Image 1 (cartoon, one colour):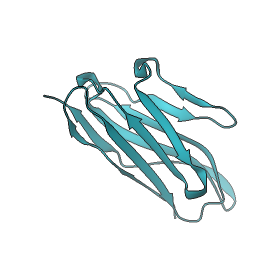
Image 2 (cartoon, rainbow, N blue to C red):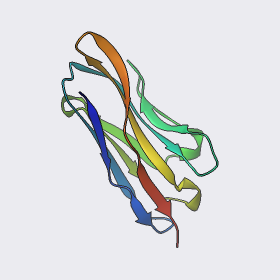
Image 3 (tube, rainbow, N blue to C red):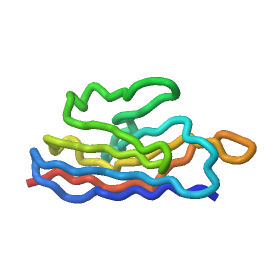
Length: 119
């Protein structure tokens, strides 16, 4: 059984910062990919930032240098530092990790953490 636990969301004023964390726990053999996604009300889920297999970090265009994804592979943990937040960044943020577990490779999703940017 593998679970992803996200933390770090909350209410912040425009221009503020938040740091999201996502830790995977369970019988994990290898971390393959890690990433952050978000879904705003009335919109489809979209990628925010991700580490694809064998590649450097990739960011959505709307990030515009404001967010930084980082990771600690040994701890199956991925972070998202979000600076200069805007009201349009308000969304539920989801962590995704593609993990190698005994016998197979599986994509796991967290339950989401709410980020609200408002004055």
